[in-house]
Length: 393
Image (cartoon, rainbow, N blue to C red; front, side, top):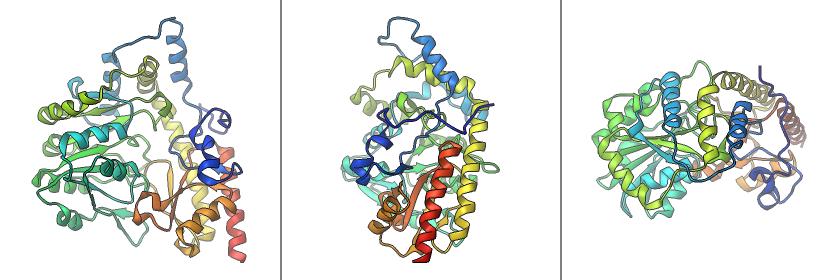
């Protein structure tokens, strides 16, 4: 059994979500619930593997051992029924870096890259910084508060100059775990139009029953042939600080094209300590992850239960995966700037403003509930008291 009721403090450890409070929110007097890492201790078996490696007194250049990729390949096969091989795998320090390489590899300046908003901000920022045309295919918000793909809009947006689609699966921030039939429709549209798919599947392990993550590359031969898959341990095991992920590119032609752009960056082989941490997570992490997901979903349910009392003000988007709650705050009738300030000043919580995920995020806020039980109770208490005051005004 693993204990998720409490965790080590990050207040004075240079953690991004704490260090940047004053700069981003104008005050230190709030609980940060924004950056998508967990305020939960990294698994003990990962830390033990790093300690063991440090018993050797030389920490120099090392290649990524084959065993590291083999551990990840075995995990993906067992957990998600997708088959990758050693030759498919590339080291990367982050999914965003991998995305930038894919944009460079498969598009030219001025050509179109599709993003499905609201979405993780680097999806559109990276496209724009690299001089590509941003093509928005907004998700469709259904009456039940959940999101789906807008296939007709997607078809209408594709031209001869549209070369790449950035797929977020599971989706950050709306928490959708895409169904097979939804992904198959995306695959068919992209295959017929010669569009490569970069599938960011970094949240693939954080999916709640009865939902199941379907890797894009596992759909069919066409999907496998037109896609790259970005995966890693950063989200699953709270290991973002090890700065290691991977990209799987099964199609030989795409792999060679990707490699040309990849080589220009000189990714090298990453950190020695990251190698052992990465492998230990995949070889020893199954039970820890099972218990973690139970804890995370209980956090979500407690937040959901409290917000049901105030659904005229805030509605929580139904979640299927990730540890990021997408809060529909339109009932508060506040402009986006006012909404952000209300969470800071009244609730004393530092959240991501929905507008940062694209225009379609206006009126929403994103709350990270990957915290220990005691912290979750504090978040809920702060938000509830603020909503009580707001409801009385």
